[in-house]
Image (tube, rainbow, N blue to C red; front, side, top):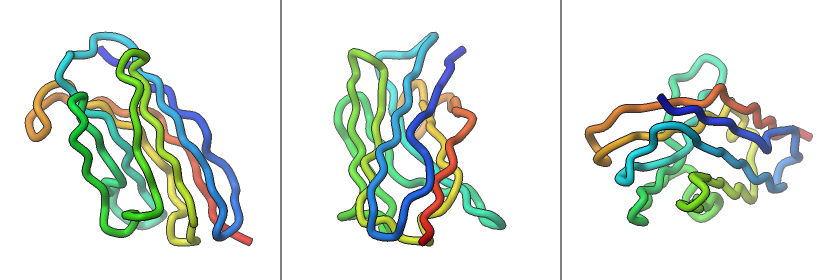
Length: 119
């Protein structure tokens, strides 16, 4: 089993910044990917950004150039730096760890942290 604990959500004005953190513990494979998904009210959960243990990274088109994902593999931690936030970024952000290959592994989820972008 894997446990994920997120932190860093909150209320921010449009144009502001937030940094999310997620620490993983438990049975973590050496080959894995960690990332962030989000779910806005009335919408499906969607990928925000994901980074493999080897450094491969993928971003949603809507956040490219504004969000940056990074990892500290030694500490099993993933970060999401969010800049130039927009009201449409408002959502619950979930940390994800996939044990195994990028496209074929076992997913684990955090409980989520709420990000609200509003003036």
